[in-house]
Image 1 (spheres, rainbow, N blue to C red):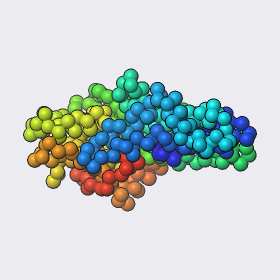
Image 2: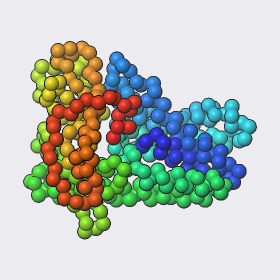
Image 3: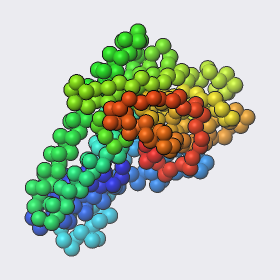
Image 4: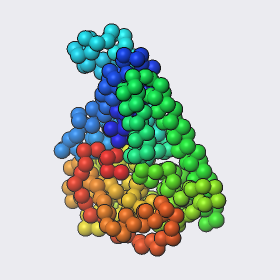
Length: 356
């Protein structure tokens, strides 16, 4: 989730069991503790190894097994101030609650979170809410503000119930869209090897479907409005990348290792896009849910295979792309134009998920 909403989730949970004279203090504690897990992004940025952040962002600091330690660290950091207003046990309770929301709320998005580390390095993503969802965030802000002003945890509890209900709606939408996407694949005569369903930015109505069949990825958009008002938008397809597609790459090179790291991060959803420089893109994400054009990827320099590959982001901010997205969100007919297969590089953000 975006970092502000992570703090809001921590604040509303901490407030929900606070006493009357603690609601405002719990709000601040929960908010700050909810931000702490993302401190990993500060320590994994490297100009020499751009993929280091992909390896460790949302890693052990987001594990459910790290929650007690994260809560304790947050309590110790805040204790010089909190000791004037709260017993340590209450402070620790609020920091642990705030910190504990980080990994769980992130796992609800599509980016992938090492929720069960050290048992497994698998990145868990339930894909039931967008990384940025204004309705979800505004509802939390409203509940937190009322709880703080009225000095009662009741409103925070309402906000917590809304958040859980909203995530359950996202789960229902996900299952509904997946059934529609599988039915579409069946009409094409495709045997689906695997499928991912993701909400598009800021809503639970328009979804992106990516499934693999016969070594290719097929992207489609599904608008899951009210029952009977669903709409499908057939999209593009692209071949799945295999290392054998580039026999020039030495298997024991740094470049080959970086490709494998990026493949793990992307859960194998990677494709090759030829151009002036070869690009391997993460096909899970695109500006349009029907497009194969990735929003980030690694650029390959086959002439220098012992250097770490750069990680770049690519954004189509054109009016046509924005309008096509809005039209699909509203359920209008859209004339989809095939996009250029070679994106233009943009400035890299602090964290890839902030670019989604």
